[in-house]
Image (tube, rainbow, N blue to C red; front, side, top):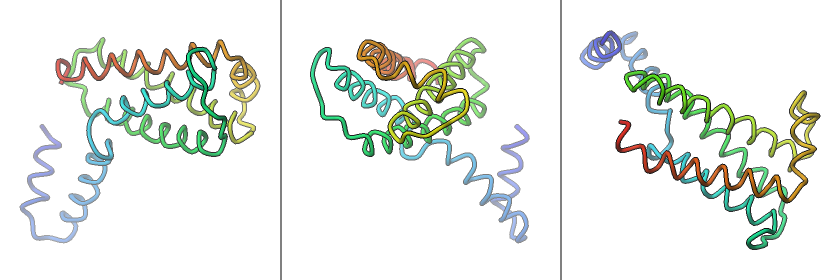
Length: 162
């Protein structure tokens, strides 16, 4: 309620400092998502399909580390924006909010691990604990299925949650 009042004052005020507050606040609130509310879920399905293809279990796709590293980087940005969006949607049920936040943290860690894997980066803890497991086709397949299933769940659940 307080945020709404601040936005109203900022929108109706002609004083420069209130306009600056409005511009900053509008950017912060609107930057939680780039284009639409489920973009991270759609991108999660794409990332999952790529991982399933890299595993070679159902189909094969060529290994292009630079492209996949960039895609995982973009996916990490979308996940961070979704983590911030969770804090702006605390009006939801506590368990849904907690489940969404935990899912986003797991996604972010996996995406960071894949960025380290594809770009051959040395990220403390992630490079030593998680990255060695990413060379296994079985693990790629399982993580790909995880991304696809979880993303489809959030796509289906989104209209009922908000």
